[in-house]
Image 1 (tube, rainbow, N blue to C red):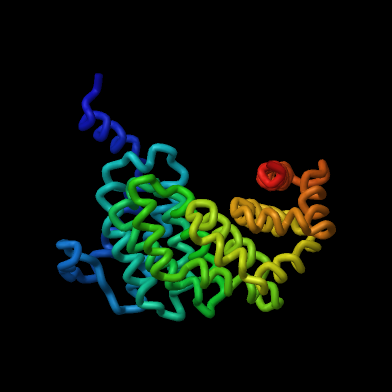
Image 2: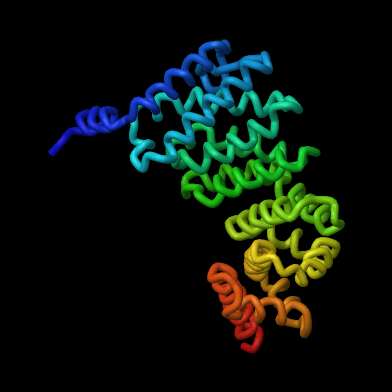
Length: 303
């Protein structure tokens, strides 16, 4: 049987020359920045105030991540594990700088990073990532807020049991659910794109699913619930799916489930239509999940 070190060497031999080239370019770009000592974490962190250098770093990170996404074994490569800390430090620094010209690009790289790298590699920077992404959900740049919602949703969806409590405390401290609810209301007023609504709604449903205390204030937001009711008529499959996921998360709160059951017209019609064969498979499944939640509440109320 091969030792861990032997397996690591074998993985490194499998790295393509293209990936090695991109890794060297990434290191070169990062080396153009400087390091400062962070007393909180007791280690050196990357920083750079030059916009062009920041842009070069973002391009290098993006290209490197693209190469990793094409390799199923990429996360096991030693060069990836060794580079993660510097990549995250650089990305977090650039996001915190909030440069108008780079925020959209940086937030897009954040989405790519959390979708390509497995959560264990992000673990040491998890809270920094959550605080940073949460702070940008209220960005006036729609694409930035949308990308941050997407990235944050992926982080929360893949949380380990050991980090869940700390992350939920961070979400509470940053009032993330309140911010997301406000963003969804903006869409209901016709001020934002469909994609923006989808990502914000999916993020909120994930938070409500994993963090029960957040459900009550959301379900008691009359303006939000009215806004959601007005969106029922939208025919886009992606909108239907996002709405159904949100209602399923809300329906875990008994009071909301009862209100939805008591709505004798619009709401029942929405989730019954969602289960029709003409809808995509994912929409039908979510319609059945919501119906199941409501049936459980209904049966409990009869006891």
